[in-house]
Length: 262
Image (tube, rainbow, N blue to C red; front, top):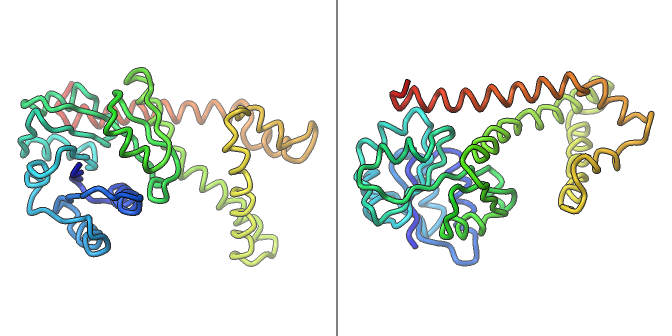
């Protein structure tokens, strides 16, 4: 299968890096949108080529991955003819299947995905909706795959990905505190990275829930519990849930505005 990608930004680059380093790399056609990154990827991998236009990507590929910002979806798809025999896989947050189908009069099959940067190293997890075996095989070669039962729950998974930089900022804040206590910044960061990486083994065990893992890493009245209650606690969890609600509402708002919906 020849895979096409329209919109060659950071997440597309991660996907290409991941696919091109699998045991049997597929052929990959890139759009000229994001020309510098596309050119660099084509120079890096024999299986990657840059097409002359977005339409050339569609014409050449059976499956086309759309990795443009939600605001650009209408303009990009409005200039394309995607025939019924193709599959369009959209990574545009908040743009629903119904929204996409309205923009595709030839009625190709439409799938939504939530790829994350870890696909570059064949790690992490990609949500896909609806069930689509070729998409599962593609992203399954880059890590785990999750197919939620409906689009509402797919949207919730999308909103949850908005916490990634916050998780990293937490680690950066701890490292900064250590630096303020006299450790060299590189030493502080190395220690914090080591702590975080040490959690990986625990997280890789699906037999223990996250709530159980919290208890595994603290003792009643101990220092881990002290920090967790002071920093997060019920109020902090409520603020986080409210922020995720805002993300979900904002994603749909951006998509509706870009598509001219009320």
